[in-house]
Length: 430
Image (cartoon, rainbow, N blue to C red; front, side, top):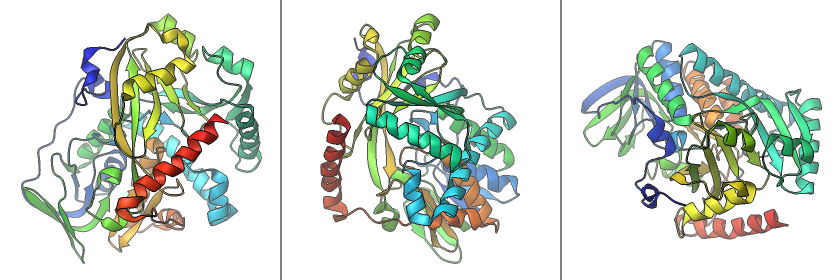
């Protein structure tokens, strides 16, 4: 059953509908001078603004739409250490020592997130616990090997392996044969968290503007960023627009692919029924390349994401398609009404590793979170602030990761990726 409100692309996300009060910021008019100008009002941008303003710098943040409008306010809300790429790939890319440092930074990013929630009293429905679940026995074998590596190679001991019976005792489904439960990970309301960071940045002295897309950027000793009604003259700039940065910087655009992902939310299920689905309220992701992810909201809806479009086009009824995937996991929800459905763009890199760096000595960028950025984006903003403040070692560690442009140029790269993803979908079925 589908409520009429979700039949239109303009339907709000559950996150938007569940925010009681939302701060509002005027568009930029006229000219501002800043020590640092930040482009993008998501988690990375608000994090950088908070860190830099707290250090006494004059910070101006420009958001094209509203704070949290992009991926930061639309995602699945799951907080997981590591990166979208496999950790062994970073070993191969950088060597064991630097890969270890990156892993440690990813773990630290969760600590930073939780510290900010407490320090700034951000009410974002934080819940501890997250589990990766295996659909097939070979995936269970991989989880077992990864848990061993986490413990012995990376010194990370909070993840424990569960067999199929233990997973079934935790989740109201028999779909999974194994799981890796991490008590250090968790989930939250991502839009509330992003808005909380924005409020904290404002209180620290940052100046935030909404409805202010950057239409041109002129690098130099001082950087000029122009909006439809104004401009910012800044010593430094940090670009945090990711998939929504568009054609502003073609060199960055070619290094990422915008991918559309979809989430649905059921009607409130009630405490008893919700607990029968996920007994300890943890977040859940499966181990497929094209994965399903789901969790409960604070008002006991099931939030379920399970489809992506690599062509960034909604070619069929994504609500019905995502609901069908949900019912493969929880057939007992056949009578549950779907009250919200929404989509958004995330940015993936060729190797699924994050892409942080500089275009000029005073022009920084943060992108390529590849669907794994709720915690990492907050850390990325801090690392950029550290680098601008003269402590660039950890920021530059990410710059060592080797990235390539997507092949095929602007016209052919999307069809090429769609063809490649067909192979991964087939592999998930085997």
